[in-house]
Length: 118
Image 1: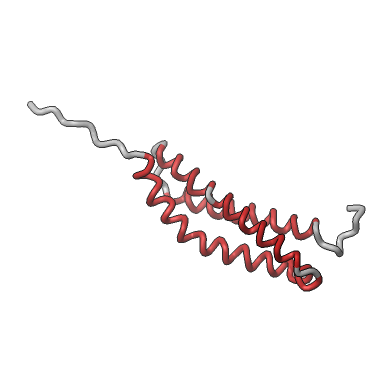
Image 2: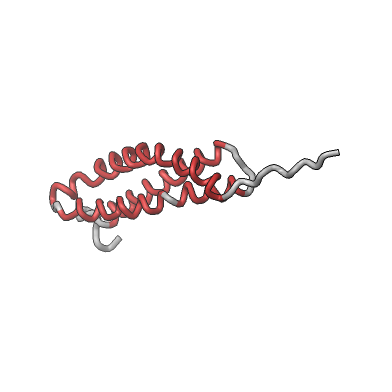
């Protein structure tokens, strides 16, 4: 009688690498969607004050840093044993919508056309 060895456990790096590579492909879509949305909303402000573009670029860098939460959360969920693709889609869609909402709020709150008493 031979003893069977337990299946090799996957290391966090084994789980994280394919997850992060898949998210890097989604990053292009994320940047395209949010850039188009933000520029569409902020174009009048950029035309009036070019320094607004600098603020938006800084916000874009911060948004890309927060983008890393998606693959980090998915890696943790996969490490717990859930390998479903819908998790990635749910995280991506909800994160992109949340970021678009924050960008919209930032633009509205910094708009010179909004009364100061609001």
